[in-house]
Amino acid sequence: MTTRHPQIHGVKTKALKLIPDERGWLMEMLRADDTDLFTKFGQVYLSATYPGAVKAWHYHEKQVDNFVCVAGMVKLVLVDTRADSPTNGAVNEFFIGSLNLTLVQVPNLVYHGWKCVSTEAALVINTPNEPYRYGQPDEFRLEPHGTLPYDWTRKDG
Image 1 (cartoon, one colour):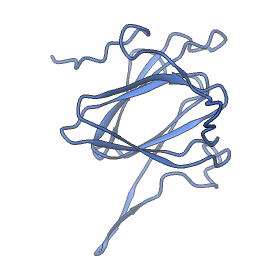
Image 2: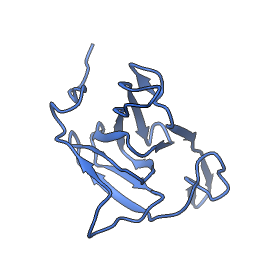
Image 3: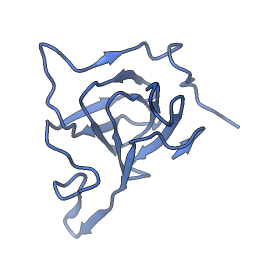
């Protein structure tokens, strides 16, 4: 994780491991007995992001997200704007994907989004604790550029 602030209050991570054999491999992401992470099951979905594309910003009032990038790499960015949070104003970056197999749990009310930083499309699996409500989504969006204190451009140096 790269961060300009302390880890945002309520954010949790889990290092993932591959279990290989001669047929291929298996990777567990989230289990019901992960007592520090699992609350309940809402749904599972897969999101593809093309190289250089940004999918941001939004937060949820109730939903907690559990992101794992299973192909390619993304820069997952979290911004804590919660007035009562001990980490209000914190910005966290997580580089997750095939080179860093990690689950990142994003608490409700924390803005989040990602940018594909690999040369191939990134595939992100989310296992949120709430199902998507089509008629009344628990999703509050901002434009990806210029709305929060974060610059998505690559930082060369």
